[in-house]
Amino acid sequence: MYNLYNEYMSNANNFDKRNLNDMQFSLLNKENPYFNYYIIKKGDNLFKISRQYNVNPDLLAQLNGLKKDDYIYENQQIVVPKEGVDIYITKEGDTLREVSKGMNAKLNLLLYQNPNLYLQSDQIIIYKEK
Image (cartoon, rainbow, N blue to C red; front, side, top):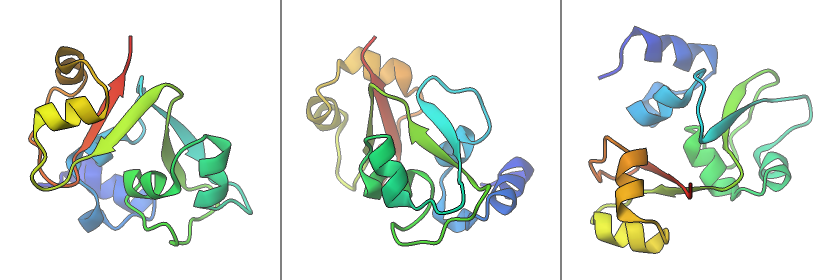
């Protein structure tokens, strides 16, 4: 399932690749309209970063394949949702209609912004009102 690029990115960013899915890997080191990239500075922690960007700390950890209390390293790169972007991480049993309604999202725009929806557990779904 994971290719050489994914292997490289997991090693470069101190990620345990077993905790990341393909969507999370695809977010790393690419221009993305939905995420900013943040380089960890000395003294940073996920809670502090989540406050700075107004993001739920649990979501920030999950987006980056981390647990909320995991140690983060100086110069490590993480993704942070851009302002105005809603994120939902799927759970077992989710339906597209429920996700769309829960995110207050237009179904056709949700599908356009997430072309590979499988509704498996732990899939990242993004939505940005245009």
